Length: 319
Image 1 (cartoon, rainbow, N blue to C red):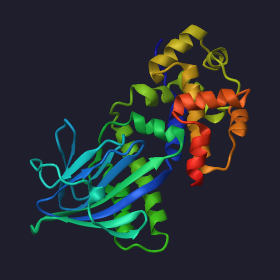
Image 2 (cartoon, helix red, strand yellow; image 1 turned 90 degrees about the vertical axis):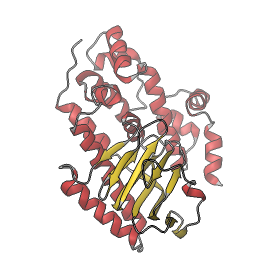
Image 3 (cartoon, rainbow, N blue to C red; image 1 turned 45 degrees about the horizontal axis):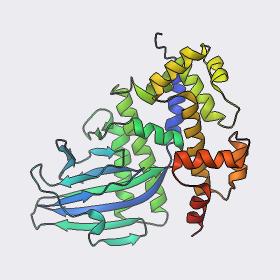
Image 4 (tube, one colour; image 1 turned 90 degrees about the horizontal axis):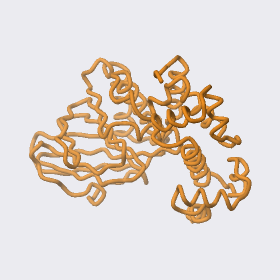
């Protein structure tokens, strides 16, 4: 079947980008003297970003060639992968950044001074953030291992540079509410980086992003995202896609990477996980809202997908 993408695909993608709201885990303003090297530990379900405000930095993932970052450049590491920041591509791995002494200006923000006494150095703004919205997390999974936006590119010439300057100013001179402002600016930076990546048409013609923009499968994904508690089954979803059951199931699995009901279940459980962590809500209520006829059935699905019971997550949140 020929792939068809219409304006609805762009609307659905814009809706996902509009939900990119992040929870700040930590921000660090690093002042580094040559030679220097830092290890950024792996943090599951997170995205790291690095902005070079002065000097040069090399970013290296395991088993990959290092990427050079210069002043004004932005790099995102979307998959919670551990990586290294280096003063030169030949530098050996350094200490873990979270184990180094730092000046903590707040619970979520520090200044790190590290490295040798060389006159040339680098200044970075680094952040670790995570996402609550399932669509945002799905989008992050579709991104490459490193997403690089050069400060001298056309895409970054105005809007991204302006955002970078604002973030540098907020974090360099912390004020009341500065962390909230920096988080919102981080939202904008990530959106700008993702838009630039999509505009360059890099790897977006496959996987979930491609499915989202497909006229038929995208319509089904939007319905699942909008009404997750509806009594969906393969027949109803196929009817929405105006396809036969077999053709729909094959096409959905081909584009999304999993069967329709498996995707629906995982989407519901990710929503439930987010709500348990952020609200005072019972499993019984979630079961009803997400289309389960019994709390026991909901609990089984939740534990299978998330790997923990709803009660254990709620208890952890209450500590």
